[in-house]
Image (cartoon, rainbow, N blue to C red; front, side, top):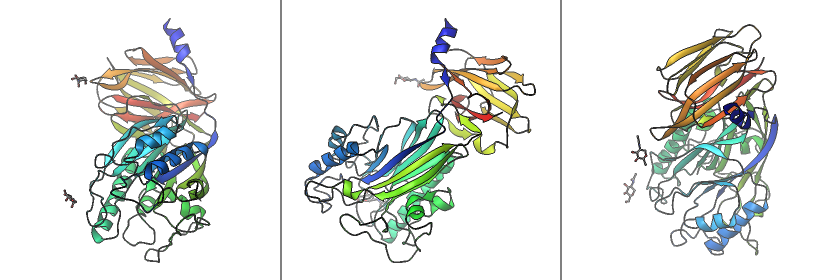
Length: 435
Ligand SMILES: *[C@@H]1O[C@H](CO)[C@@H](O)[C@H](O)[C@H]1NC(C)=O
Ligand SMILES: *[C@@H]1O[C@H](CO)[C@@H](O)[C@H](O)[C@H]1NC(C)=O
């Protein structure tokens, strides 16, 4: 009976090795009209409905909106993306940040800025900040997406607050996206031509590439202190002008991301009398993704708690597993793997009884079963069993009614792990390498 259940739940790890998707960043100017008219013609409810309809009309895969405040219900009523964040509220309760996506995600978080400034505009009026989600593009293929709306204005207090905002995102990326592909797209309220905005932190600290600089400026950043490269009002004739809505990205050892084109989509978002619907140019970027020929990952199982880890950046060339050690009792406490190179990785806590398996030369770990359940109201992994190419197994923990068996692609074996841990194993996925 149980083995039948496992058969039904078995997930084959054979993601398409490549694909494409596009993203859109758009400030939808949804502050109440009484606070901010934005100088757009047409009333905001009508404009917002047109924006939602346009989200459907074109093939946008992942959309980040900012200032999605008091017309949010209208926006969602006119859009039909399958996966959308729940609003955090209108002014003065919400951040105005939402995501509309064709892909599902894990681990969504809303983070408020540590710093805001009253120097100009209304940056402390409403709890602005950024959002984080681990977008699932395909099986085992995740891209960490950050939406943001940084402090506006150019008074000294604004510059200080904005640089602190962007640094806060950069630090979060270092903690939560180590080893991962990353996309930051949102309203940075920053220009490379301004000296004190701090927008270069994503390049210097996180190794992100700016899609506009790369595609439109030939890879050359505008000089700090130069005149602003302002876009004209209305529809720009090309993208050779700088806006504060930015797209920055990086790939990982697992998945390469390629920028296939940067566009201002202003002409797509016009009223019937050809007036703009917001005071920002919507920014679209196309991406192609390709998996490394020798690496794959499983999906993550468990709950979004604990601290992020991944062995991906630490893998030696041509990794092969030598010893796999699982520790557990009632639940899965830890996983540890030693490679033939001598490298070893351990994740989770210190509890449990250890069970080890030493692999023979040529033997690989070809599948793993995880079971999860709730403990103290948080989902975590309770059970793990791995099977080798020789049919040997190592097991720990206790089974639950929620299990998945993840199978390495033919010719691949488990060589490491990624996920989130604490004193136990909250969330776990497998890294496979070609053997
Ligand atoms: C901004 O102004 C509001 C309202 O006056 C005040 O409550 C808040 O403390 C101010 N914040 C800062 C950072 O100055
Ligand atoms: C779990 O959640 C329930 C319902 O919200 C609550 O009553 C209970 O105290 C929580 N238990 C723990 C261990 O946090």
